[in-house]
Image (cartoon, rainbow, N blue to C red):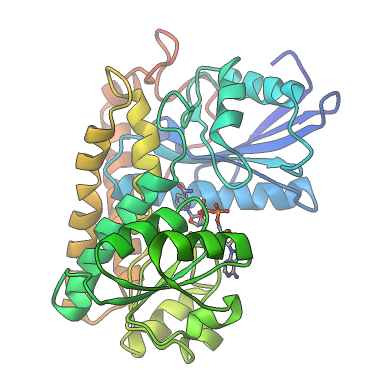
Length: 381
Ligand code: NAI
């Protein structure tokens, strides 16, 4: 890359890990690519003041794996990846830092496409895009992914509602939205417009006031929202909000929201199932953002109408997952994990069976760049 240092190594289970350190601009980052044989990796760039680069690396690997499941289930022709920058989003962003990060992306030559995530914004993507081609979520493209993610959550929530209550009609359905940020607020607006009876919570009182004003929702204290007596709980804040201890406190019949990893442990999915509370798996229902971001690579560029049409995959997937979960009396998350593993195995078999697939060009990449790229380190089983 010509600046700083870049180390790459094969992690476990087909992960490829790139560590980027540039002391001149303070960049410390990790880019994790999950199973590069699946195709160019997509996944946002997270910025957070992690205690160490090792902690950032663990997060990047877990998030890259989750992205793979999300893109496979959304039928997108990519693999999963994630970039994690160790730094405070309020103070660490400088033109030099984005230039160094952009150089690392260029060095990967289209094998990883970045985008916005927690701690980064469309304006940051614009800054990176000044020096790298491999950026999604720019303000001239999909921009803020929150509204399209909310749209996808709405699509999935209706399907889950039908499976749980026999109707997709939101009129009068009591829904608690936890977190009123980039996704939670546009989701609340859509639910209110469809006639739902809304309850909203956020740690930020200004966000609550704004949501109440725009939707007529009733505010709930942040600590009480998980226990609100509602039909649906829509977690749209951080992950891990429902653990074994919370399952007994829930007074909803359905959990369906945007938050990544809202269940604290795998056991929580089984406990919810045992209590008869339906859980719409997060990485199926919240795929609207990556569906929107990757639409920037369409021939002819980003078209919102095309993205809206593609959100139908969320309804299709969730419908078949929830039907199978009901038929086999299994937690939906378990069915989803098995489905994603099957899709992954099929895509890998197709990639390794037909070498032609590996010669396909990376979208937007340099002429002759292959999906395998050069210097690939990891091999899928
Ligand atoms: P955001 O940072 O814009 O908003 C999150 C909101 O949750 C903030 O207003 C925050 O104050 C609030 N919050 C945090 N802890 C809370 C608590 N305990 N109780 C109530 N409110 C709390 O985040 P964004 O982008 O809306 O994302 C929300 C979730 O959806 C995250 O888990 C994210 O990973 C996930 N997601 C977001 C996508 C996007 O397009 N932005 C795409 C897919 C998933």
